Amino acid sequence: MALKLFKKLYDKKVDANGLALFRIFYGFVLLFEVIQLFYFRHLIFDKIPYFSPSEINFSIPLVLWMASIFCIILGLFTRFSTVINYLFSIVFLSTISSYEYHMFYAYMGVNFLLMFVNTHQVFSFDRLRLKLKYSNSRTLYYPSRKASVLNYYILILVAIGFVYFDSIFFKLASPIWLKGLGVWLPASLPHFTHINTSLLLNLKWLVLFLGYLTFVFEAIFIFTFFRKKWRSPLLIVGIGLHLGILICFPIPWFALGVMSIYILMIPHKYISRIRQLFNFNHQITFYYDEECPLCIRTKIIISHLDFFNIVDFKGVRNYGHKEIKFKGISREELLDNIYSITKKGKILVGVNTYRFILLRIPLLFLVGLIMYIPPFSIIARSVYSKIALNRNTDRCTEDNCGYTLPNIPQEVDAIKIFKDFSVKDLKVKIISFSILVLLFFQLNVTYHSLLVNNLKEKIGFSETNFAAKINIPSKIIYKLSSTLLGITSHAVFMDAHMDDYNHIIAVQVLLPNGDKQFIPLIDENGHPGYYNYSFNWVKYGWRVNSPNIDQTLLSNGLRDFSAFWVHKNNLENTNIKFNILVKKIDSPKNWSYNFLNIQIKKPWVNGGYFIWEDQKFSSYILDIEKI
Image 1 (tube, rainbow, N blue to C red):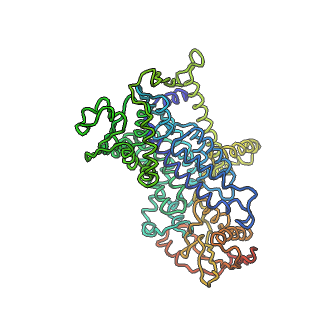
Image 2 (spheres, rainbow, N blue to C red; image 1 turned 45 degrees about the horizontal axis):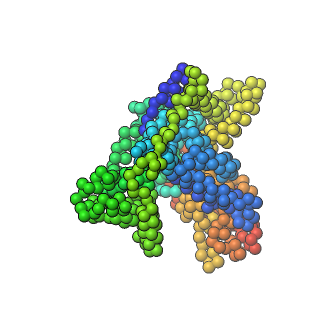
Image 3 (cartoon, one colour; image 1 turned 135 degrees about the vertical axis):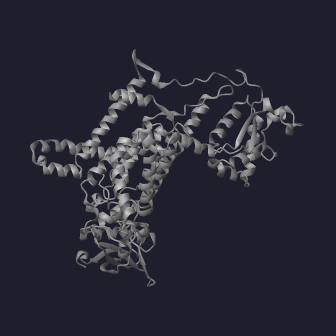
């Protein structure tokens, strides 16, 4: 039954535009996340940032990782780049335990699947490479723009479906979420949010609606996302909820990363319509020699990168003599040089044609701009002249062009392994088995969820010998699935994260000139600063600080963040003092009007201080829980 279903889905081919848009959007999100890792690499990897460096310099590996992600965005050597990207993900994302946060697991799951799904079929340089490889002056090769719908479904299932499915088993055991306060409460705590949204939070009906909507949405998603009638409503709600996360919380890459997955749910007809909006009227007619191999390649490259349909190509042998503006220009000259006519009727010759076109193609804009600037403009004219003079202008034959029929690649799925068993049959079996394994991994993770654990304890199952025996392999599988595939528990914004979290800790530096300044961890209102975003937010909010403070962890965390700040401000050789400021806030159990504004207005009180003196750290931190 399952095999027939997966075979049917494998055979269902749809436009690959959505996969390409996802690849580009997701690639940029991941790239910016890695750029943030690179910026904070000394904070993350050094024993003490800059003062006691790590034994390994992680700069080059992170740069190489960024290069592989950039290749994925471009769709260049995509298979190889996705493998490199996944290996770097294991090295960094699966090992940064102290700075780990929820989005790292999503990256692991998606980066694993990127090695197998066909995201490079359109809008990619890999597609261009295939066109150039299998095209010549008589035959143009266009690779398929279709991909199996399974490419879409598997990404959505693992990156969103599993997350929501597991999350529900925590929310069903959460008093906050059962009251409908799962959206309101975290958005009402200053140190959780980077913007004041009190205007919306004060509408009780709205926040309760959003809380229950999130609850229901996550519960039904995995059972409905593949249904055509459900896709648009789920897309609208999903994008809306994560847009809210982007606005409210200092985890932008999480919000944008999940939104990039939702691109896969945009109906294909809408993507086609959006693409048609960018098909502008031709701005230039490019006359090329249709018998010239170099000209054919030029046409293929420009056409591939011309997303806005700027250029209209016409063969000079067939249409050149029909163009009135070319009267007086000999056939030989038309073949020896490149002629074009702009929309305004201006004739451009040679390198001027390329400059005009490149300046209007986004990916080549800088190249076109440089070609107008001396000495590059002179170099461009010289290079073009040499190529034009040495280009073959005789009519192509097998003798002078070495023409051979292109060896079009065979459809791999059709290759027979056995008499009645093809590569396609093998792939369907592997895909079916793999999806079932992934489902097993997710069920194993959910077995350890809060709701299931509560039920196991309630019926006494947790104390049985059978439970003890299955816990050992189950936890090993859990660890492997979490590390390698990002399939893990998703207890996000749960009661334990907020219960009795009644304090905000900020750091104020006393500058050598006598001024006082909040370092960018927590600002004057108690909101996170720019040091306190994404993985740093989780690090500072729940590992350095937490509802129950560990004085040693707090001291070490303040040491590391301040050391990083000291270096970035060139104050390593300055003796400098930092005041620890504490804002005591409420920890509510029910909705309260204007709660966020009330917390923001609460005063800062003294929580101690710490000093960097002769590049040595010493701290004097008060018992914050007793303040």
